[in-house]
Length: 592
Ligand code: PEP
Ligand code: MG
Image 1 (cartoon, helix red, strand yellow):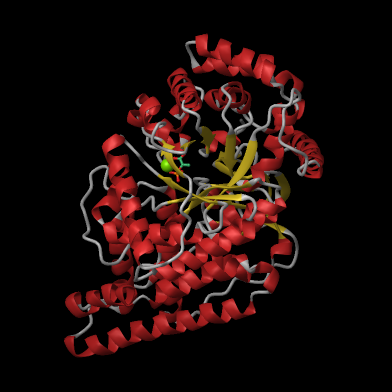
Image 2: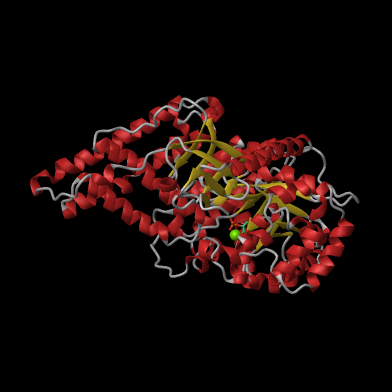
């Protein structure tokens, strides 16, 4: 790697070469902190309130101008409008005027920092990114305070957009046809800019430290969304090398897309269903665009976020029912809330948790706040009148927890029956296998549920003791670790021995290098980000169950990640020159 190459997280595949366009950093921090006199406090608080109102109007104006074909922005902007409208946000910030007599700009700064601190303890990429959005949103308010309403300067030619971060409002103001690629300092796989880039099928790299100091406006840069690199002012060799890679990748992508509707079946007739993981209702269109067999994981937490109240049963029911009817006859697996009170905001005691990832989240949270849980269960059960709906519980650690949850599910069904409210009596109920304790008793759990879905994002985190959001230990995040392979094999065998299906819905399911191993251990289905489905299908269609089973046997005997990587490379990937070129294996990631 040369000195002019920065590394971040690849969040949308592809290569782009072009001119950098830097979106400026904030300038409001230049406003000095002032103490205002007591008699001006009310006036200052009113000034802040009006700035909020004007920023809101600005957002609403942007929302009105969004063309229909960019409807993905609308829902997100609505959420942002809701955040700015939240009286708690205004009152938290105004408190600094009332109590500390700070000027409005600094009261806002302090108030937002206070809220951010509460977000920071949450061990989840998605929520950290939402905290960053809150910061960007308040930039609009600050710009109103200092009288310089901000708007992105018009982009006249096609550029690569670089920014600290981008909110949906920012991206909605952009002319998408002019953006060749994105790179941001903040963000990760689930940032809005990442989702947008994948939707637009343009390359993007997030989490690039030092990006805005290393690159000047107008510099020629290369975005490598395959491996997560940003090459600044490339030399001739780099330009040639990346131009070739770009040409080949675009050709490859077209090929892959052309075959997306073919069945996901190996050369010797073994079928594996390929489902999509989605987070937002709007993403459902991607299931059709990329020929997914349905939704294997609907993460439902987002309907609970960025709002001052809880969603009602009716609201959730309509959301789930609409999603199920759009997808029918394809299946929809709805996962119950996988969050803690700190994430879903208002009305919850603020618990000081030392290790939130090991804390009161997911089913643990639901068991403490049974009303919230039951409301969601009622909505899911009602939506399950459509027979394609199944239910899944996250973070199950053992039998007593599972039995307690199933008891609540039964109680909820009884209540619905008594109220003569129709629901899906026969809805399948599965659990996520993402805790080592659940793995060890997979044979017992398998007797009590209809299916398993392996959540490798968490299973790797908890098995290998690696914070999945900590970039300093990211190199230890190894799906091919022998301990993990044994765990996965044990889950699959336990599931099958008890007659239930086993799917995988963690990121591992979209890793081309892991695919032969998953086929070899006979995972029944995979659920992955929709954009990766065609490429995974292409590889799958060129593998045989026979060769993957042989590989699996050798992998089970191997004692290290490196040997596993080498086995996959030597035995399988030699016949996939394209994938070898485009996707980095764990081996290369280790070497970097
Ligand atoms: C997982 O843990 O692998 C998973 C799919 O769930 P999440 O990423 O939402 O925790
Ligand atoms: Mg998980």
